[in-house]
Image (cartoon, rainbow, N blue to C red; front, side, top):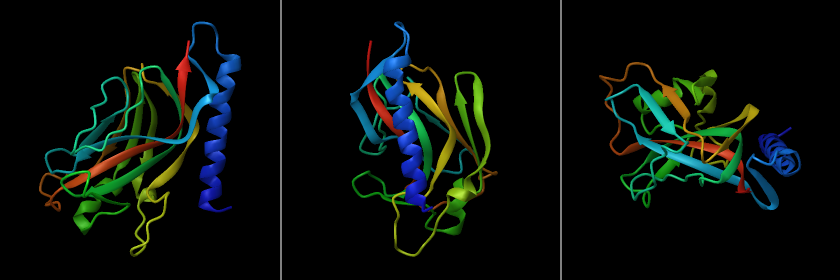
Length: 200
């Protein structure tokens, strides 16, 4: 089975899960209709890569920072529902999103610190995912870029809404306080998901 088949199967499973919410959700729950589902969709949060901290926390809940000309952030709407089936970690090089190049590896050896780290996911007060080795997300293959470079399928599927107060992805890097990173690097954390516009 190819990588594309694996991600397609995960995406289809997420779609089926979201589609079933219309039939199974209670009266008080958020639900969606098949005509309001988008697949694939991506939620993105970016942070600069600097030696100031070894902990990068990407907020995907109500605290999500808006996109700017520097941060290429895609947010979930307050009334939307997303079923997350994968996580993608890319290094972006470029001061602005209009000139940023994304790769699943750093331009220099020291820039690969995010790929020598632990990935954690916190949902509300619970750390739902931990001990994910980010090295499995690194891929350096010459000048070719693949759609799923830097991505892994996440099991089990996680469902979030735009109303969740805490949905964070953390990258816990080793000590980077003395590391000299290439200028204008950003860590791009992407949630691969199936997105539904909710109806009450």
